Image (cartoon, rainbow, N blue to C red; front, side):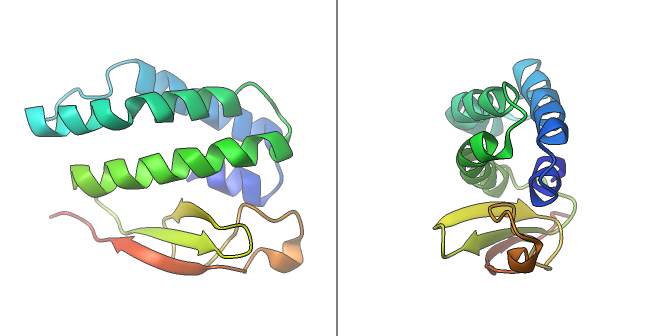
Length: 133
């Protein structure tokens, strides 16, 4: 969510830092504490998560980060949907103009793919992952 928020604010340096933190987290022990089925699911999505977070962490230019963020968001949504371990509601949101998705912890649309603050509210919710109790 921090990466998405940085892109919404056009803060490439912050997105780079947060992408690097995500990469480090994923590269350490991503399946720690998970059951075998969950570990297998993590293995399925780990490579695209690592690749795209690493590419985002190699630049501070939001124009270069956004395409990797789109791929990262898609893989992360599928992983979280399969793991069923989220403790808060996660919204998958969609920008039809760019045909791209992102994740949010709020139903309010804050589109990370537009450069203009006028367009930040363009998008819609396409899926919702409810908290697991």
